[in-house]
Image 1 (cartoon, rainbow, N blue to C red):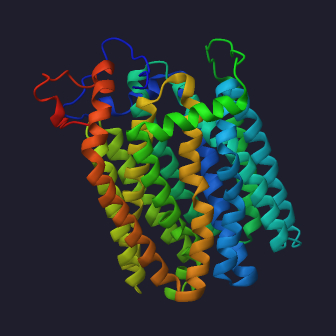
Image 2 (cartoon, helix red, strand yellow; image 1 turned 30 degrees about the vertical axis):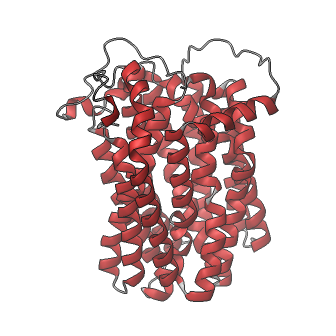
Length: 446
């Protein structure tokens, strides 16, 4: 059984009514407050760039296949390099890793802005810069996830910090696409890229200002390959994490790439323009934000395992119905539920994994989480582009949504085994009270 992450004495109550005074407790940590402020500004710019890149590609070629291809190019490096990046994160100073990734990401956005504003941008250049960003993300995402425990000194506040981080991402996801639609309609995609590049300054400053007290990084006695193998052995044999990552990879492969097709829905299905695209992405962001706020109010990780398959089912059903819609108002409502289900599953999975994983394997485990979340998406983006060319965008999201529903049903069937392995760790962490041996098999909480 994996070693549980140490937990401070006297954690907050493991269950009970929620209240607003308890909802933002992770912000009492100075480092996390700095991260919250800097990252919120930066993420708004990131979402602007995502929308602007998709619209730029669609404006230049009007091709669903190219939309999928550009997304594939921007995410495939993460799939290939994330496990190696996880080993590096476990061996290096995590704040230093993040300072490098944020500075490189700023350079990438500014290059994209210059080429677009100079009106010399081409599809090959977009593909090359997307690959560059994917290389950066391969190290940035596991580094950020693993760094979370160093920003929040009290481990009892970790689940709340993850929920607040999700809220921050989705506030940006709500504001960024809508702002991008306005900027594109008024001027050019290049100004979205410029704003994004400048926004990285905020998160770089926040990282520099942090006071992180961690032990000196130990030089690993084993090789990188041995550490890579150790990390894979852990995630592939521990049933809860293996099951979560399997479902997560399926949802990322089949469900998440619906965003790649949003320009097609905005332009051809709903007969709109860049502002329509901004509204659609903003609706999904609003649903995700509502989901994140409900998670912020939770006092414990108890019950999150059951939430994962329910969220996958909601996500899938919403996508199927979205594929049937030809009315903007109905599409916006359905995307609210799509965003809600997506974020519930994402945050619940992240929280459970972060709670279970031992500290010495955190970077590697979160690298596999990154590979499942981001790394599978390029294949899904390519598949979505091909399917949309063949059967059309509406039928594509209906098919991929059905796959997410099937994945949720599979995970539900695995819940008894998952809870059985989680319970001993939760008891050691003080999240669950020990049960008498005669009823331990029921494992009703997880």
